[in-house]
Image 1: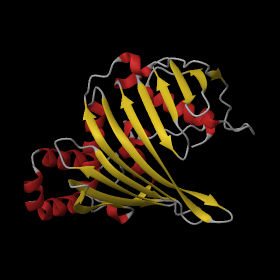
Image 2: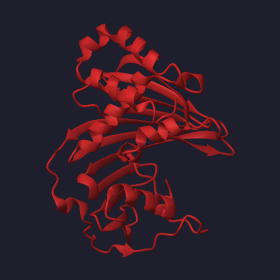
Image 3: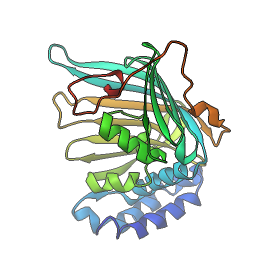
Image 4: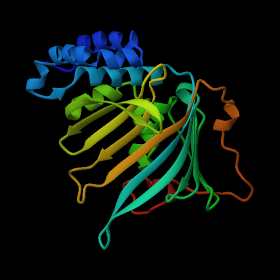
Length: 277
């Protein structure tokens, strides 16, 4: 069974999820699991996809995609490989503000430095608070295409970027060899669906908040194909759903004495603050 062919089963379970609250979900867990097993039985011959897990991911992606605006705090911990010391743990705290399809603001503090990224639908600006340097480039007219271009051309990494893509779940299924619902657990006191999966070069786990707001609460990715298997872990807190975000916050206002610099392409030997993760 192809991913496309399994979408009918995904929609069926998604409808069931919408009709259940958390207590109903707990009572009906076994029944839904049997339904999911039946829907995914043929596909399981080639990949272990739990239709229930896929449907919860679909619900999260759908919910995030329907928001007119949102904001969240990302607490990220990630490994950087050192030839001398092995894996070194780093961390950043990032605040993400999304103003519809064409506006994005990110403020970040941590081991990558104190930095800000602005996108107003026309221009992308990277600003290093530490050095009072900024760089600007023209950008496509929506957040997803802007992220693609900045990552491809300059190697810039955006927190929460995966969840902004409408094809997020399909992209996972395309590469994954398994995706299963492990159960219902708590993260910082919040009831969450715990979902895990694997592909040929990584394993991943997602904790998705139980409705009515199906938002990501935690994510862990382990790069199993890389030396020492570095890990990325992020928690997503302080979610604001459809807040009023003034357009002015997405526009860069040059601080006094700020120096304009250029972003160097990823194939350049030069290294700038913007090209670091």
